[in-house]
Amino acid sequence: MCELKDRIKQERLKRELSQRELAKIMNVSKQTISNWENGNRVPDVLTLKKLADYFNVSTDYLLCRTDHPQGMIQNTTIDGNNIELELDRTIFPNGLTYEEVMEKLKALEKLEKAGFKFNPNIYNDK
Image (cartoon, rainbow, N blue to C red; front, side):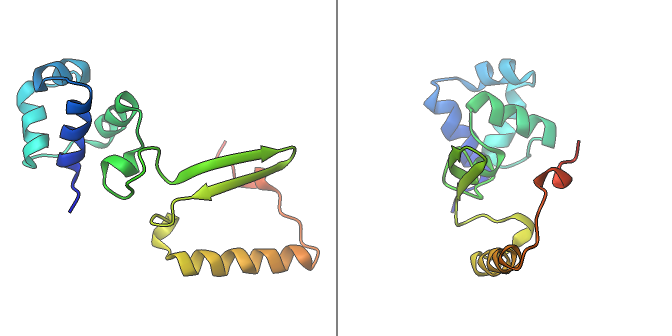
């Protein structure tokens, strides 16, 4: 079974870094890296993001929520105003199952066919 500690070590070794070198990059002690890789401690949220950014992987990947390093979105196609996203079927927002997501998408499709318009800009947090 995949665990955060394994992913951190795996990504560090891929880059041929020692624990000391990764510690310097992350601005933590070598002991901290050792504790992460032994499963004695876990990085805080900000450090987890920093690790993901450094390793160029998603936090979902580091947390073993997906086996795809880039995370939930596997492929994006943009054609004019249309955007098509291919999602990793093993991860869904809010803990929804694949079937629940498909059911909700079908309901939205029915509403659009009935004439409802959805403005994607209202969902932005900005």
